Length: 380
Image 1: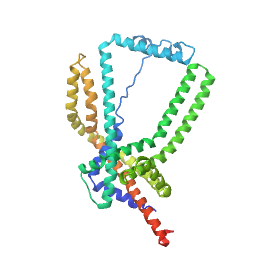
Image 2 (image 1 turned 180 degrees about the horizontal axis):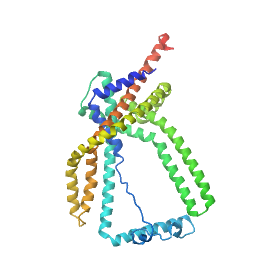
Image 3 (image 1 turned 90 degrees about the vertical axis):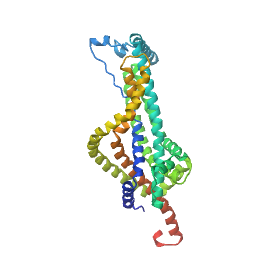
């Protein structure tokens, strides 16, 4: 049986005595929050007589104004009105329209590049952390950042990505199901049959809740297997499918210990969430100071982007819009570095717990059969 208290204490010791891991924890925290770089624009429209002064899509009669006997015809009318609104904007504000398209493309490219970079950083940091903790347990040796980066920058990181992708397939299937349900309800609504709409709403909501419930249970199991499969891939150098198979076998043989550790880690995460909530206020105050550094770091890429954008004929404020798109990621990383650092502590601790748990389970797989073969009474 696992000595859970020992594992938790040892993970705590590793966190505070192996400072190089903090760098990789910072990278992990940054990477897991990096995918949230995005564009959350909100649009609103005024009611009343001011509607006819707003450029864009005009639908004077609301959705009832869409003509057509079938959902496809109504959707065609909607797309036609959207196209007319775009053409109206293009005619009335040609420069702003071109600059808006360019800004949107620039934003998309920046988001794509940042997403790729943070994904690479995440799996490199995951691989490095697992190897560094395992090596520290074996030899009590601490390595520097350069050697840790070499541990992470390997084909194993790609396997971690593939394992993570496979374990998230049920979530992708859920997304497709919810999309089909939404399309079914919208099509029924466009048909205008009230009784059919009520039936589709009831059936669609029921199917959605059932799918979400099943997927949530399945994802809990798969993510637990993923954590062990990652360590199989990193420490045993097994392939993707072999890692998943061996992880499943390991968890099956030790399901009581794994389940108990999973429950303990839920409690640890709850405690950490409360502690982080308390710490967030002083961290935000510190972030005000680091924001100065963020401004300094973002100055060069911001000015470069503004200089390039100013070469094109555009109103004075447009170059600064492009500059903000380029400079904000640099500012964000430095300004909120205290929050990323503290978040990284939690991620390193959690990773260390599962690495030590994996090591203990592998040791039990060797010790218990040996005790049974020698006839030791403790093997019963």
